[in-house]
Image (cartoon, rainbow, N blue to C red; front, side, top):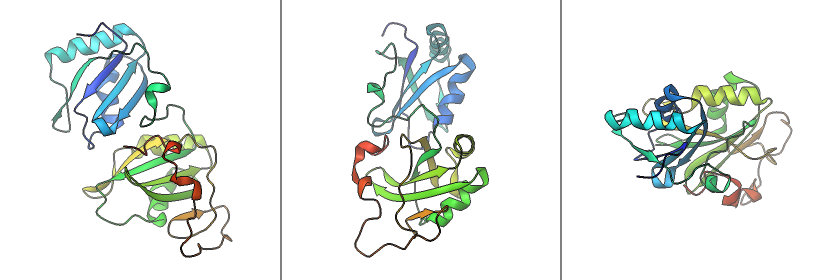
Length: 221
């Protein structure tokens, strides 16, 4: 067994398990400083504020099998003593709150448009821009709010929820981008602050820079 660490390694984390599910599992034992979802490996790394909190959590779950949404998860001390930026690349969640959200939609049985996303996210604040794209992780969208607080509220309220009953599950993280570039207003991208933008020309990508997987923490999952 690895020596005690404030970083906890969680295995068997299925796609139906959200970040909030893991937070609820460990919050009773102390403050959670960082959480990294390793979707490609069905694993997660979670850093408590101090070692005693992590020890208490693992002692408790050595006697009680932790289960989330009917799935048993398995916990142990990580070989890491601290989560660093290196550990969080390329598939980790950005820790820093940002007004731009990166949204991945799992189990997408129905088409999701800019209009649908706007309807889902606008109750939490003024949405300035939306860009959608297809990556190896599935259908994704970048949603830019006017304020950080709106983005935080939306993430807290919508993470793990389904857009439609039983499908189109939202997996939300903070993007590391500063500003979205929207060149066209159409079914794939929209700048709500600039309604006079043209629609896209056929055969041209509205977001030429968005093909670079390194831009998005979740792109390789």
